[in-house]
Amino acid sequence: MPTDGSKVILIADDDEDDLLLVRDAFALSGIPLELRSVSDGEELLEYLFRRSKYEDALLFPEPTLILLDLNMPRKSGRETLAEIKAHRTLRQIPVVVLTTSREALDIQQCYELGASSYVTKPNGFNSLVDVLTTIGKYWLETVELPSRCPPMAEEPGTSG
Image (cartoon, rainbow, N blue to C red):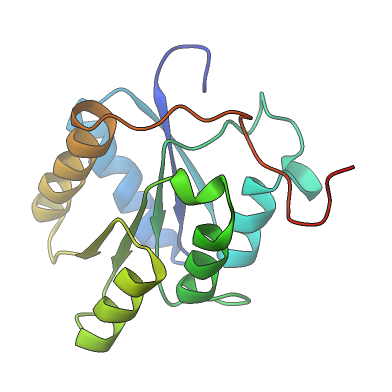
């Protein structure tokens, strides 16, 4: 957790324009949070497993919530969601799929893989602010989430 008491939302999305819009929308939401971003599923797993440049827990705090796009390079959102939810302690982190797809099969698969919510990216900035404010208030201010010990789990088969 950041030292200022705000909660961390980690967004995985390869579209820089979408990331900028999400940052701006959360800034207008009035919710105290720290937004972190990664560009694909592989980088998201590096962050969560503290690999590569993400080893320092102070620089890269554990997320309270993950926003996950489905269509990304290297590792798709579906593959990444499956890995997160298959991990004993990472599965406790809520994952909200935030994507452009309205396909029934995508929605069904994401819930079967353990998504906490599935939200279609709205058209228009004001609608995005409304949606992200609702997500933020719900996941960061309304629900009670389990405390996590240890703070970040090791990847299966890497503990000593």
